[in-house]
Structures are given as C-alpha cells and as structure tokens.
Image (cartoon, one colour):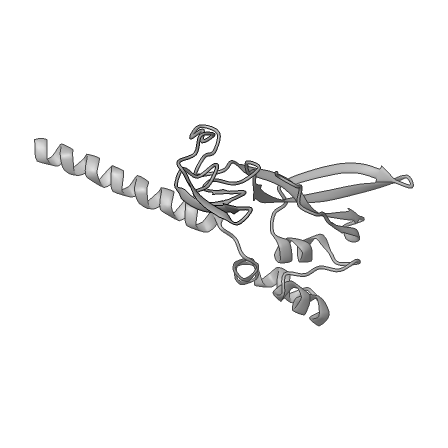
Amino acid sequence: MIFGMKRQILLRALAFGISASALILTSCSTTQTRISNHPDIFQTLSPRDQALVREGKIREGMSQDAVWLAWGTPDQKATGSARGRPVETWIYDDYTYANAPYPYPYGPYGYGGYFGGGVVFHSHHHHRFAIIGDPFFDPFYYSYIPPRVAYPAKTVSFVNGRVVSIQVLTPPRTY
C-alpha cells in the first residue's frame, strides 16, 4: 500500500517535471523554429521575403505574419491612428545591465583598487605605493550581479496589416 502511494507520487512529480521542461523549452522561439513550426505561413511569402525572414530581417510592406516569423512575438503592442487610419505598433524589448559607476570588481584603478578590495600598485610622481583593501567598498551597493533592465529596442508599425515604419532604438546609458 505504501509503495503504491509513493510510486504514484513519484510518477506525478515526474510528469509535472517533464511538462514544465517542455513548456520552458518550447517557449524559447527562434526564427528557424517559427519557420519549421509554421511552414504554411512561410510558403505564402514571396521569395524575397522568405530570404529576409531567414536572416531575421524585415522591410516596409511586409505582412504581420512575415514580421512575426522574423522577429517573433512582440513584448508589447500599441494601437493608435495616423492620418485617420488605425495603426498597430509592435514593441520588442532588449535587456541591458545597470552598473555602478565602476562595476565591481573593476574600479578606476583596475582590478582590486578602490571598489575591489585587493592590492593595487599605483604610481604618483615617480613614487610607487600599494593600496591594500578598499576603504570605500560596500558589498551591498557593488553587487556581483547587476540588475537586468528592459528597454524598447525596436518597433514596427502596421497599417492594414503591412509594415509602414521600422525603428531601431539605441540602448539607454546605464551608468
């Protein structure tokens, strides 16, 4: 009786683990996996658009389906109007890391000096001396893992299901 119950719990846990793994692995979509999983959409594209999609590129006049194959599902969608016509804009995020002025353990004096906590040899007016430790080191401020920050990296706008505008944005400064 006890062995049967343990076996049932083990089988349920195993099934849950496999399901969770499958969900995680299938959520990572690339251009090639989208093309492979949706050949019917890919075949409706012109040869020129098929070549662009394979390279992960888009152009003005492309359909929403082609953009989806090339760039994937947008992180956000915005709706509006331009010249009295409805416009849908897809926003794709990218990520950067927010850093301290001098990311740990590298400071203005190299590895270990001010903001690093090591030994740094420094010269000043032909005199060499060692800086031992870091009087300004704060382990709570200078983290090993800087926070990841999302920013809108590119947008594409559609009118009547066709691309009318493409924008690639510069990453924000994080220091």
